[in-house]
Image (cartoon, rainbow, N blue to C red; front, side, top):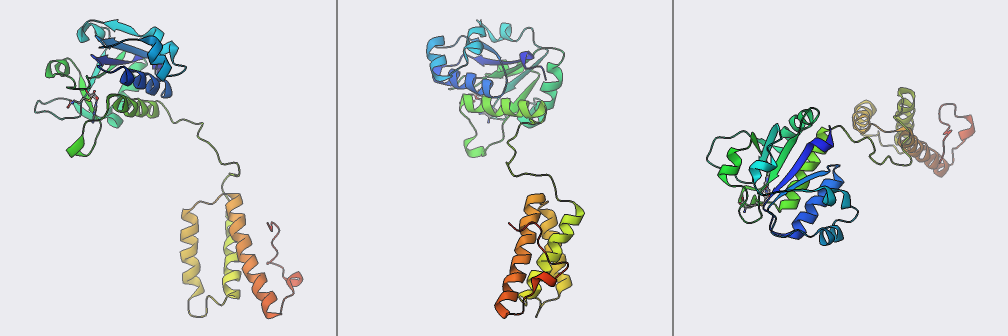
Length: 260
Ligand code: SAH
């Protein structure tokens, strides 16, 4: 994606707080080009007071007197609307439009147009759009706040632009357990359950098959598989000590090398 080619256009926004929240949403999602058509208020100082560290977007904002001019240099113009109206248009969800927006941004400018808070985009404005983005909602209350709508659309564009690879990685995540570790885990669990007499009225094969299915679905990492294995050994060792027949030192397979 080329973020500098994805332009957010606000048509006659009424409320400065909404403008600021749009700026902030853009910043969160890596967008930087804002155009405004006849805003009711425009006060960079107040906007950046709400949208901290967003001066670059605010300073760079372009002002227009008509929507027509604001989108004139864009090769893909998408309106946004809560209501699907009677007219036949190219409606699509933000998720469906995302990849088109990203692809088109690589070569030319795209506009995503948001309507004013009290009445949205007019039919004439939507006529000038190539398509319409609809954010699916409860049909009984379908109209989002302007900035929230902008955030959802910008988020979908952001995701379509490539999976963010900086998701937080848990400190202990150590990569998936390999087959050998998985088998150690299962056999430790089986020993533990045996010690508890869990299989007295149950088939060990059936129970173990269920546990295999369950734990495989969880795709444990090395650390997690180690914990479950240790649980199995701990159960076994504890029961043996309780019944006074323990000699863990003679057990070949039952050592827990990674006792936690
Ligand atoms: N009362 C207006 C709502 C305007 S909300 C109406 O009924 O049309 C302000 C803007 O937020 C809308 O013009 C549109 O750009 C955007 N928006 C709000 N809800 C949306 C939704 N569900 N899908 C797409 N855009 C939405």
